Amino acid sequence: MLRIVQLVLAGVFGVVCAALVALCIRSHFWADVVFWPNPVASAQIVSMEGRIKIVQLDPSLHGNTPTGVQSYDAKSHDAATIFETLRRRSNRHGFGILWTYPAVVCCPHWFPILTTGALAAVLGIKRMRRFSLRFMLFLTAMVAILLAIIVRP
Image (tube, rainbow, N blue to C red; front, top):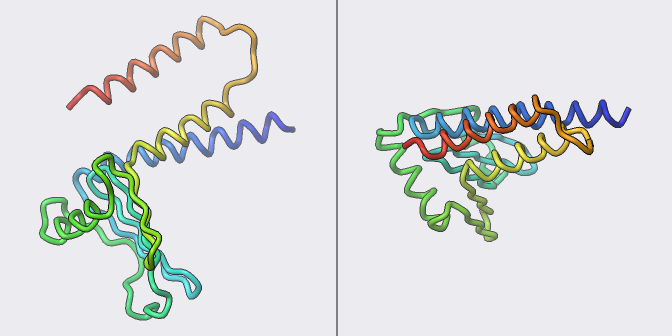
């Protein structure tokens, strides 16, 4: 039973990792802003230029904030304004936390991708003493693909 739960969690983390890779690629062409209205704690999630920003919004402005997803072309003036505020909240590596109200958390896309990918790998690999040749070839191919993605401009 525990093995089934591990495999299901590995699959979920694998799908989340793949979705984050797609979002990372999309973020270089589009600026996506998701507004999540909630009477207790509203949030805004911004994905642009390889970075993610999560902002806690004031719940008293619940009626004034837009809802849903808005996408902007990366070359538009609105996207430039969004990116400027995103860049000001984070350091040169893309990380940033601002604890004053509204609370802001920024991180580059590679951080959640690496985290979910590592969790999927750790949960998916069965504890074994020896690796098969098929597994080693698969692992070598995945490392080669990952390095090709990183190195390619």
